[in-house]
Amino acid sequence: MIKKVLIDCDPGMDDSMAIVMACKSDNLEVVGITAVNGNYPLDVTEKNARKTLEMIGRKDIPVSKGMKKPIIREIPKDPFSHGADGQAEAFLPEPTMPISDIHAVDLIIETVRKYPGEVYIAALAPLSNIAMAMIKDPEIIGMIPGIVAISGAFGLNEYSYLNATGDSPQSEWNVFVDPEAAKTVYESGVNLIAIGLDIATHFGVDFDENDLDKLSRSENKEAWFLNNAIKFVRNRGFDAYCTVIDCMAIGYLIDPTLIKTRVAKVGVETKDGLTLGMTVRDDRHHHVWEHLPEINIGIDADYERFLKLIIDLVLK
Image (cartoon, rainbow, N blue to C red; front, side):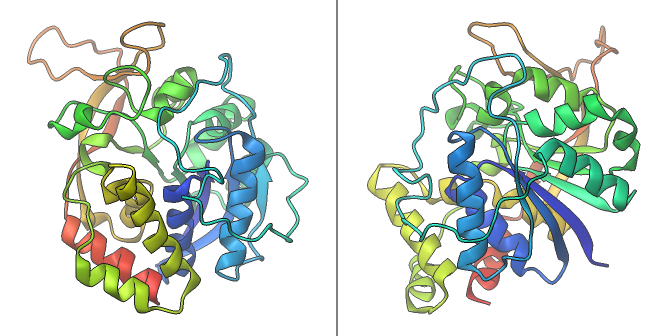
């Protein structure tokens, strides 16, 4: 069965690759892309979403602009850079396709209402757009079959905090940017699958020389884009997982068996300071905080199959 997917994103090299994956998969139908402030300001992220669609010849998918800043906070500075253009300095041509005149929050609401129970949301960015859609029209919460989010760091292994992407010691960037939005979505009751840094930034997410050779020999622009991004991050001392973090959410939507999940009680810290943006699990046998929301969190992944899926779709 083909799943309808709306992608909420802040491209970002990894968001760009996630868009490529979703659009090239026979298992997904991308019904819209909503851009938000996150890795870069909104004017950059929405333009990069359009650049990516044009790279793969998909001008038919609407792109709309959303929240320019977090719900109540100022915009923090991302400690990690995706380059001067936000796309690993690929410098793709300026887009010619128009931006939608519908605000992203309204596009989310309209799309979910048009296809009740059918539209999954791939949440690859701070959750500002999605939270505002839920606040504006709470009825859509029950119409969303699932939100698969790159969100949180749950302390399941060393990668959870070793590769923390937020600007507090144990936070993930998407939650850190707009913790109030994350709290809203986590507590909404929606079927939320949160793929945290424990899984998404695992050092098992890497490409071997055979993969790089295949990418370099391909005539696909998206193969060149991924190869360039891998070189970009490696030249800066980072590992290749940085180029495909957001692809994990798309991988799960294509094939849920790629990622093992479990239910957990999780709270989002919204207080400023050392723990801002932390996603805290309560796994105690006794004295559990019953008021914390239950969500699904990723606990393991088949990285070999995940990487093969990416390469196969990029080369398709």
